[in-house]
Amino acid sequence: MAIIKWVFWITFWVLAGAFFHYTLPQVDIVRVTDTYEKRIDFGENSIFWAQADVGNDGTAVNRDVFFIQTRRAKGDVMVYRNEDTGWGWPPYFKFDTSNLQAEAADAKSTGEAAKYVAIKHYGWRNEFLSIFPNAISIRAVDGPDAAKGIPWLNIFILALFFAIAYAIWVRWRRFRMARIDPTLEAIEDDLVEKRGRFSRWIGTWRAKDKS
Amino acid sequence: MLALARLVVVGFIVLTVIYVCLSFYSRAVRKGKLRQKWQDGPQKVNRETFVQRGLEKYDGSIRRKLILGVYVVPVVVVGVIIYLTNFS
Image 1: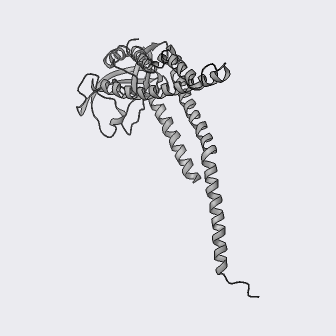
Image 2: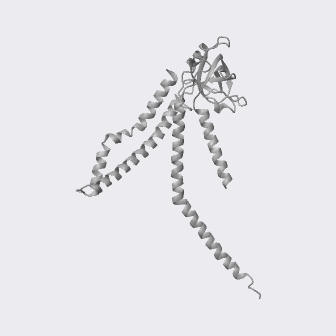
Image 3: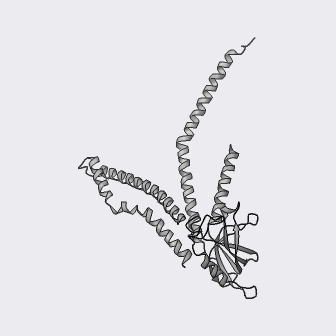
């Protein structure tokens, strides 16, 4: 029973953590190396892609998606997709995909004359699923060591989440102590008593002392 | 437009549930406070009349209308997010 409980709660918290890690915005300091668009046929990874640009036909099975190729200040490369989130999830309400692509193209630079930008994004890069983080906005920064800023929004949302989780937990514990535990104990006591009676009854069938 | 319609409809339903729960809760709290006030006061009228009058006053009050903020705040937040994401 204890194992089931542990597995359940570990699964729950891993999923919650993954959800927030995927959905909340993060900032990378990068150098844009190129921008391109590519036709994507969505398959089993379709949940990790947004929908067609707002106003376009959303029923088509494939479409062109903007991409932004970058090299991060850390040294590795990262490819971002650039899609409208529109009115859907996650609630970034991003409609300016094409403008963002224009900005990204404008920020292109080579390693010799490097220009760095801070790119705000959400999502994951995963080579095995062919999924890409979605770029939200771009702003120019001084250099590769530029500060990313304090993530106030993330702090606020996570604090709110933990406050709600704590409030639910406290109330549930109080409810359990007041209502469920006494009932369970009563059932247990009842069972013990009944078992006692039953074994006494069995005892009457046993052979008595033969001495 | 379909996505917008879906957001509006689902949002409206969710917010309505929150609004109804909140207004019932707020009314119950007010009722409790009025009973307490009657208990502590001179008790010139009987309790039911006192509470009834107090609730009628509450129904017309600005406090009760503030609960409509349940609808207003998310719309404003969405508006701000749209501005920050796309136009700044």
